[in-house]
Length: 42
Image 1 (tube, rainbow, N blue to C red):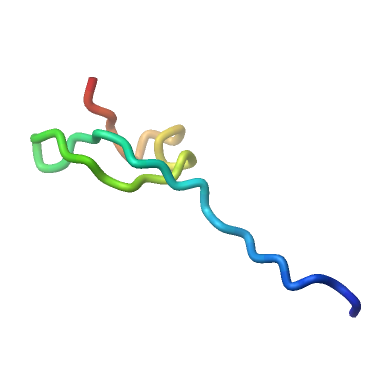
Image 2: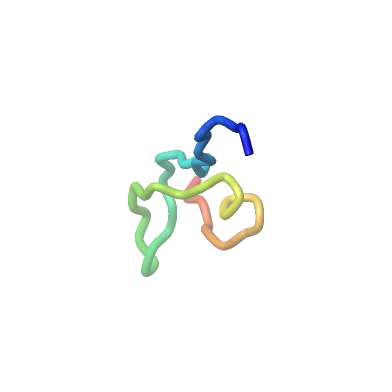
């Protein structure tokens, strides 16, 4: 088992998303944005 200790980190971006009906700046992963778990504020 010779391998490097590489860590897989999520692709997190700071986006303006609608939380509780108001737009807020939150840290959301790109996978959440693509799947529709986080609604972006335009």
